[in-house]
Picture 1 (cartoon, helix red, strand yellow):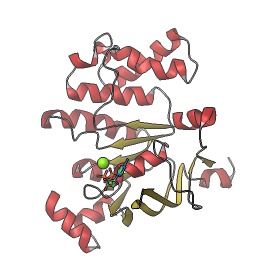
Picture 2 (cartoon, rainbow, N blue to C red; picture 1 turned 90 degrees about the vertical axis):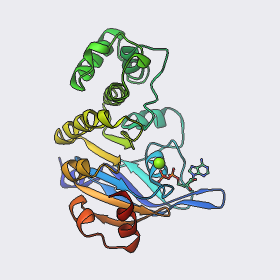
Picture 3 (cartoon, rainbow, N blue to C red; picture 1 turned 45 degrees about the vertical axis):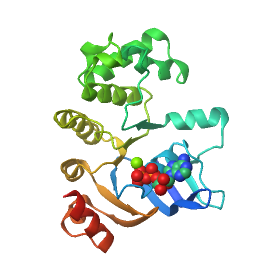
Length: 251
Ligand code: ADP
Ligand code: MG
């Protein structure tokens, strides 16, 4: 590899703005995420965390004002096949799991790889089983999502994202819809992924996870990143009064 390519960030957001009508949800976002980094995103409700994630895999467009997003050095295309291919590089895990209710756990995981990556059913099932085992739900493969606990469903959602072999994984509050006793089993899987070198953007207020797995922390307020620091420093010694105020509410 040349120096040039090793320096290319996996995710580059440069001068990104996002309006919904006259409301500005993202304001001049400039964030480079290098390969292997685990970037935690925190901030009050409505500060733009979900919108930030959604623009990275183009579930939302950004303002057409010169700002841009690149994944591994490539601009996010507007639409079509190129977008589908690039989107496959960016996996996303949502708060609400978003599994297909009428498909088995195994089918949930094989669907993307057969449709988008062009794998045979047999190969997709083989790989899917490996991912399901890895997140500890291999024995649930033939069941429907509703037959699983919330924690198991979220681990299936992670396996499904992994099966696309993404370059970066986005997690938008992956444990906030879970019963408290199931939070840790999902965080454990995420810690494992982080330790394995996966590049991750994680919206979460789970401080233990942030400290253990996070390399970096972005604090958002009113659509802007107002602190770009480490989890360690943020929780111990936040700089802005908004961050102090935020922490006083969640701690
Ligand atoms: P967070 O995830 O930090 O709670 P969001 O990114 O979901 O915040 O939302 C940021 C702001 O953008 C909120 O004020 C929200 O109401 C607004 N917003 C998000 N999505 C839309 C949309 N599709 N249309 C209009 N406003 C939206
Ligand atoms: Mg959100």
